[in-house]
Image 1 (cartoon, rainbow, N blue to C red):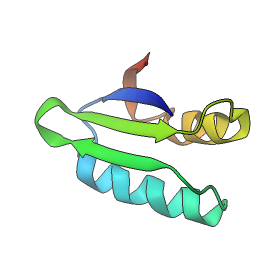
Image 2: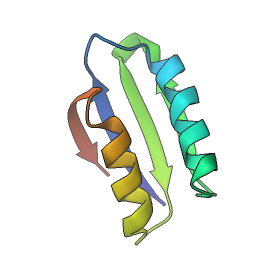
Image 3: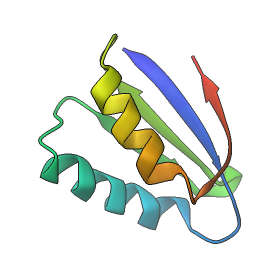
Length: 73
């Protein structure tokens, strides 16, 4: 698994954004993705299977308006 940590801007709460992202991933039939909101730090941690470019592109497109930064682990 690969972890993507998105640092959120002030527009959105991590918990609500996590729910919205889960719905979007379900619509696009992406499975085996864990989305964890961290409200205290305004972060969203997303764990994706290794080497899944389409999934990472979908997440990046969704997060474009909500992130201030991203860290890959």
